[in-house]
Amino acid sequence: MVSALSLPIVAILSCLLSFGWSATVTYDFNVSWVISNPDGAFERSTIGINGQWPLPPIKATVGDRVVVNVMNQLGNETTSLHFHGIYLNGSAEMDGTAGVSQCAIPPGASFTYDFKVEQPGTYWYHSHAIGQYPDGLRGPLIVHDPACPFADMYDEEIVLTLSDWYHESMAVLIPSFLNVANPTGAEPIPDAALINDAQNVSVSVEPGKTYMIRIINMGAFAGQYLWFEEHTMSIIEVDGIYTEPAETEMLYLSAAQRYSVLLTTKNDTSSNFAFVGSMDEDMFDHVPEGLNPNTTGWLVYDKSKELPLPALLDNFYPFDDFTLMPQDGEVLFENVDHSITLNFMMGNLDNGVNYGFFNDVTYVSPVVPTLYTVLSAGNTANDVAIYGDNTNTFILEKDEVVEIILNSADVGKHPFHLHGHNFQAVARSAADAGAYAGNVSLPQVPMRRDTFMVNPGGYVVLRFKANNPDKWSPERTPVNAC
Image 1 (cartoon, rainbow, N blue to C red):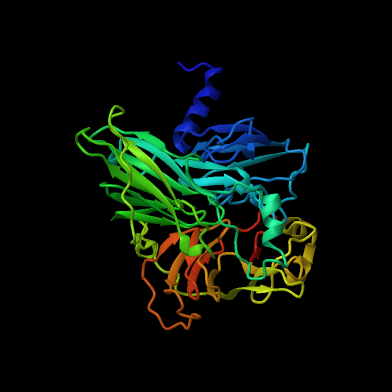
Image 2 (image 1 turned 90 degrees about the vertical axis):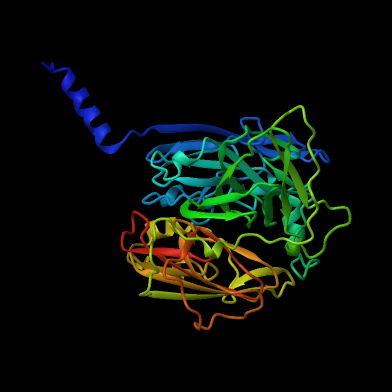
């Protein structure tokens, strides 16, 4: 017989069994300056959390509520946190994009990010204010999946981050980059490459096991090649999208891209094996004398054995991510409701400073964040003019299929990221192909991810469904191209 006191407990347990277990995971982040020297060559001030750097990962499970309490103790800079790749359906105010979804957090102030994660995968968090995250404010964000389709195919999980590293702070580098003395817009060249915010990293492995390795490029600028000597990877996820397994010897990750791969170790412990992250030097206007673009780690089978030097490669042949097949088989969005062409270029304003442009407009952050304008604009919220002349705002109807044709006139590679969505990558040209002319066949099941790279002088065509409107504006969503 069930007592009256037990009935609420029974009801609660019934709900938990019906909807699955979920939890609230809470992180208290005090953001402040610390001293670090990850490449062993130069001590510098770095943005740490709770007095530590490298930063802690944020970990959650699908369905969890994530609460991140941020206290800005930097003293001399504002900050924010963006959760890169998390869609934040119905929680656009938690996106952390200073000038778009919130005001930056001033020194001495705090902000609480509070959202639910409904998507599994490999993500990262980082500052989205004043170009700040290369100073250290970035870390992994992992969302585990109890229903992972590959759960029975691996034994353990490893997280590897790749990044470029600068000895000088962004407060110095950005003004020198956006400067009349740099009319070509040559980006600052990193001083080093890092794995897990360090160099000479050892990863202990056991023979005959399969590892799921989550790989995140948290860099500011450089794309990176990654390979494991005498081991093969099987790609199973990109940017939170499960894929049909695809084998490769080498990956290429632009800044902000992520992969999950399965790697099976050898059956004996006779040797240890190097793995290498190598910055893409084609992105650099010049290669400084003495720069080592590589950083090496080791799969350590036996700590008593030597750590071999990696072989030097003259050529790189990474996997083409455009050929990946999403496991869910989502077919091409064929009926486009809204097509947007963005012509990207680098150019100089009248002051001689080099900027990036979409359709001859360079982005200037509005005084009032875009989301706040949406909330306060009433019936004028659908007028793009209220968001500022230099925000490149487009108004999208809820659930329409949107196509973005992005033509790049620049001589460098560029990754592009879409907040709040992933996109179908339906076309990508080789370098120097010119603008998209609509004369290519499109895949029936296109690959999807949230960060995609366009080749120099080429194009990409992306499609997505506008199904993540701001919760206060249910029918239309303003989108900034910035």
